[in-house]
Image 1: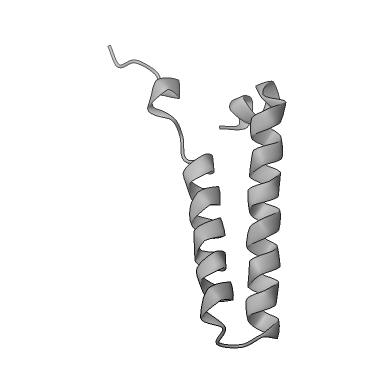
Image 2 (image 1 turned 90 degrees about the vertical axis):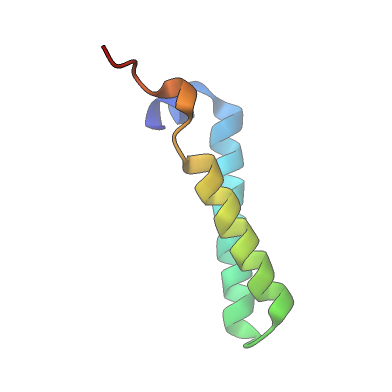
Length: 64
């Protein structure tokens, strides 16, 4: 994962934006307590960040 972030600046930017959005939605949720739209945005942004940070099957080493 770290190697992919170092090689691909677009992916690095996408990860940063996803994490920034997760923080923004979490902050809005904290400020406006029990707002379902902000909470849903937080869950979506965190899920997107997890999906982006998950190791790709193509990057796994082959077993011998």
